[in-house]
Length: 111
Image (cartoon, rainbow, N blue to C red; front, side, top):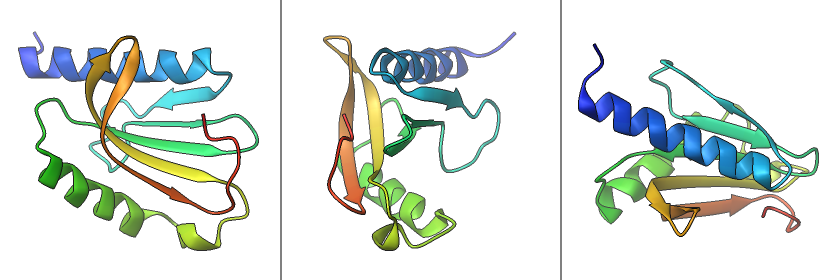
């Protein structure tokens, strides 16, 4: 039986995925990957990469965001579409609560 931390993390990842889908994104949860991204999504015009960490401190979130940027397969600064990378620690008022966020590429619709 999964432990409580796993259940809470799964629920957060699922809620983030559902939120992005409600905005018109196709979203995927990287279940069990233990990778840098828990959820990634696209709407054909922009990309989102999200790391979900319940109880993370802002300092740890910034460290995770740096790892996410470093692990990206291309330099995010040279992207031809907008890329948003985010570390969230929960949901507030139906939206992901971001501890840290970085945006790369041309400015555009990343909502």
